[in-house]
Image 1 (cartoon, one colour):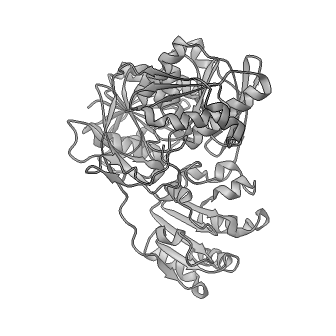
Image 2 (image 1 turned 30 degrees about the vertical axis):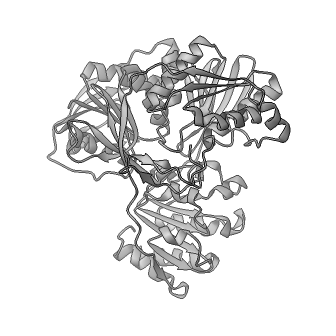
Image 3 (image 1 turned 90 degrees about the vertical axis):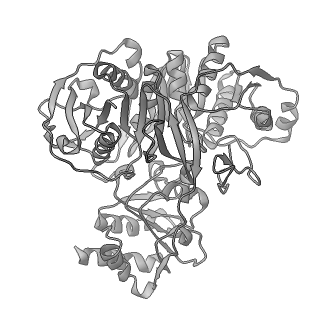
Length: 319
Length: 236
């Protein structure tokens, strides 16, 4: 099936979630894939050839440097039509959460978000596996064609590196109407120089057991040593100890890192919903009966104030 | 949708949610959207219509929306099967009954597709924004905070548009006795759900594999955890 993937670059380097999309695209296509990339002129696309990409539709227009969802949906719809794509795959994130439904509606396409894989042997019916019930279950969803739009959850598929293909690049200038660009951005508040939680491979997360925001150095020190992002439980963000974009759980951010360390978090079902696609979960809690230990792979029962400095020191020794 | 504390299980050969003992609620994100709509009504004056696509057993939930402060409710009488169908029915309703603003949750907490706001807006030819954490109106102009990866952005947009909402856009409202009494007499209109072509079909559900027992490490030997994460789990 003719497959088009939307890939994101950060400072000239393809993001890991986009590599996963390219690799998954190749699996779905059963052959090579084409990519749409918005990046500055002169960006090196040759590394994409290892993941099955043999053609890049390159957008250099400045309004796509940090694109808005609606113009992106318009651009991808045009690229999909030009390329004759039957499947369009995007990495799932806050931009594509807003863009994918509009893209699908423009194309009259079937659409599935939060996809974690294909049902094996389902090529004829095109059934995808999705994360549903806020991470408490999976659904197998048949997506109607002839055109389909998918968003792929982070860290859900293994990247397959193949023979490095030569990548041809064609410049692509999307045509935007006035209606596509009505939204005005007034200001941005973004954490800089830190690892972003949704992209993080490792996460250290604190709960009410930390007793107050003044104790957060325990969390940030361990996170810094591990190269991890920091996160928190809902009560912690509700009390404004930490910003809302760190809140992990059913109504917050759902994360799927390789390592999630929950400190002083009891593990209410709503919190677990946000973390249970993590590969390895560690619980540190003074209450041995806390439900977090039921979902954890490793646990320490004890006082976080004593344990965390020891862990931070041990990580530093490791390095 | 099922309450956030619900244990999820399936019946009928894993094709349907086991509803025994499950409390059905207004989706938490939709609840925020409703609460903000009622706040806007209270501060600026507006008429709030609560709309649901669903069978008759969702009416108690719509009555709750009326008790919270919606002026009237509309139930489009059909089983919601996919996001495209729900968005199509909402868009058709809005075309026939024009409004200035459509607020809804950023996503449901059962299927978590997060598609309805964007598809509805596209079908109406309107802009859409999601996830919106703050929304203020000044005449025809809305100023909003929306969450982005690792932060937030302040954006501006003229009515009409569709917003997918999340906390902390408003405080959840708990119906008071007067609200509950008045909800009984507020209009709840039932409309037939015109057939919309489905674009997807859930063929089955699956629960995540059960977790093995936790491996406990003594607090006195906490450093061993880092060693295990390095050599056994190989995640650091």
